[in-house]
Amino acid sequence: MVVGERAVPAPAGFDQPVLASRRRRSVVRFVASNRVLSAFIVIFILLVLVAVFADALTTYNPIKTAPKITLRNPSTAHWLGTDNLGRDTYSRVIKGAQVSMRVAVIAVFISLAVGVVMGLMAGYFGGIADLICGRYIDAQLAFPGILLAIAIVNALGPGLNHAMIAVGILGVPLYFRLTRGQVLQAKEQEYVRAAEVIGASRPRIMFRHILPNIANPLIVAASLAGGNAILALAALSFLGIAAQPPTPDWGAMINIGKDYLQNNMWMAIGPGVAIFLTVFTYYMLGDALRDYLDPRLKTR
Amino acid sequence: MTGYIVRRVLSMIPVALLVTMALFVMIRLTPGDPVRVILGQEATPQNVKALRHELGLDQSYPVQYIKWLDRLGHLDFGRSLASREPVRKAITERLPATLELGLTGFIVGLFFAVVLGTVAAVWRDSVWSRLTTAFSLVFVSLPNFVLGVLLILLFALHWRIFSPGGYIAFSRAPAQNLRYLVLPASVGAITAAATLSRFVRSSLLEALYTDYIRTARAKGLREFVVVVRHAMRNALLPVITLAGLALGGLWEGAVITETIFTWPGVGRLTVDALGRRDYPIVQAVVLIAAFTYMFANLLVDIAYAYLDPRISYGRR
Image (cartoon, rainbow over all chains, first blue to last red; front, side):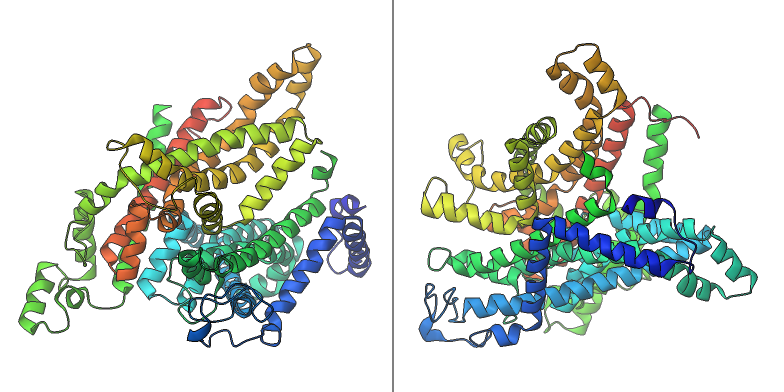
C-alpha cells in the first residue's frame, strides 16, 4: 500500500489530494496497529502540554527561595522535596520542561534555517557556493559536537541564548546535507526547468518551487532532532555555561543536585528522569517513523 | 595504497586550516580584553600597551593569525590566564588520567557492543534480542551525567562498594586506582556499548541476509563459522567507522564524566577553565580535540581501505 504509493510518485498538483488522504489513512492505520507507538505519541503530547501549561501545573514559584525548608525529602507538600535553597523540585522540573522544550525548538529552528539556506545555495548554484559551504561543513564536523558548542559559548559568553545558538549551529550539517542532496535531485526535475524557462528568478525558484517540494524529509528530520537538542542543551547547562541561576533548567538542576545526593537525591533524579523520558520519547517516535517510512525494516 | 594515504592526508590540510581559522575567530570574539584579564582593571596604560605589544595584539588580524599558527606548529598554546603556567604543561600533566579513563571505557564498551549486537542479530526474535535492544535504547536516551549520578547513588552512596569520586595514579597504588576507575569508566563503557551495539546489530542483520551467507549455509558450514568467519568480517566494517569516531570523541565524554567523578583529567581542566573564563585552556583543548577527531577519521579511512578490498583507493 504505502510502498505502491511511494514507488510511483504522482505528478505534482495532479492527484495529490487523493494520495494525501490515502496516506493519512495509512498513517492512522500504522499508529493504531502499533500499541507502543501509540503510547509514546500520547506521552509526547503530554510532555508538550506540560511544557505549554507549565505555569498552571507548578505548585510553588519555581525560583522563589525558602531558606527555612531547604533539602526536604518528598512529602505531600513537596512531591519531589526541596532543593538547597528551599525551592520546590517538582515545580522546577515542570518549569524546566518549558525552558528545555522552548530552547530546543528554537535551536532546531536555527539549525534548520541556516542548514536549509546553505543547502539550497550549495545544491542549486553548485560551483564556488557548493565548495565554500561544503568546506565549512567539513570544518565544523572536524570538531567533536559538545566541544564545539563549548568553544562557541566560551566565545560568546555563558547564557541560555548563546547555548541555544551553539546547539543550533551543531545541527546545521544534518540539514545542509539533506537539503543539498534533495536540491541536486530536484533541480533536474521538469517543474524546475519549466520555472527557469518562464523566467522565474533564482531566489523564487529556490524558495517557492524547490523548497516546498523537498520540505517533507526536512520536517521529519527537524521533528526528530528535538531529542538531540535537549540532550546537548542539558549537557551545556550541566557544565554551567547555558542556563544561569535561578532559571529552572534540567541540566543545571542535576549539576547542583549531584552535590546533595545524600540529602535529597530527587534534586538530581527528578530532572534526570525528565530528560530521559523526553529524549527516550523522541527516539522511540523516531524509530517508529523510520519503520513507517522504510517498510523493508519490518520484514527483517 | 601509499598514494591514497598521501592524498587523504593532503585533503585534511584545507579542513585543518579552516578549523584553526574558526578557532582564531572565536578567540577574537571572546568578550573582554585579554590584556585587562591578565593585568587587571587597575593596570596603567603603559603596562597595557607593553603587554599588548608583547602578545602581538597590536598587529593586524592576518599577521596575528599567521603568528598564532606558527606557535601552534611548535605546540605552544600560550599561558593559562589564571595560573600563568603554559597551557601545554597543564594539558600534558592531565592527559594520562584522561587517556586511562577514556580508553578503558571505550575498549570495554566496544567489547560489549560486539557481544550484545551479535546476540541481538543472530537470535533476532529472542528475549535476549529484545533485552539488548531495550538496553541500547534506554542508555542512548540517558545522558551520561544522569547515568553517572545514578551509578554514584547506587554503588557509592547506597551499597558503598566504590568511591563517589577521586583519583590516584596507577603507578602509585594500582588497586586503589582501579577502584576509583570502575564507576567513571562504566559510564563511558555503557554509553559506548549502547550506541555501538545498535550499529553492530543492524550491520550484522544486513550481512546475514546476503547471498554469500546463504551460500555458506548451503555448503553446510556450522552457524558459528557462518556468523563469525563470514558475516561478522563484513558486518564489522561500518562499525569501525563509528568506533573510530567514538574514539576520536573521547574528549566529549571526558568533559562530563571527569566533572561528575572529580577525575583530574583534561576534561575537568576544561570545565574548571570555563568557570574561571580561562580562554587559552578551553581553546587549546578544543583545538586538540578537533585534530584528534580528524586524525581518528583519517585512521578509520585508511583502516577501511586496507580491510575492504572492494574500496578503490586508486586514482579516479
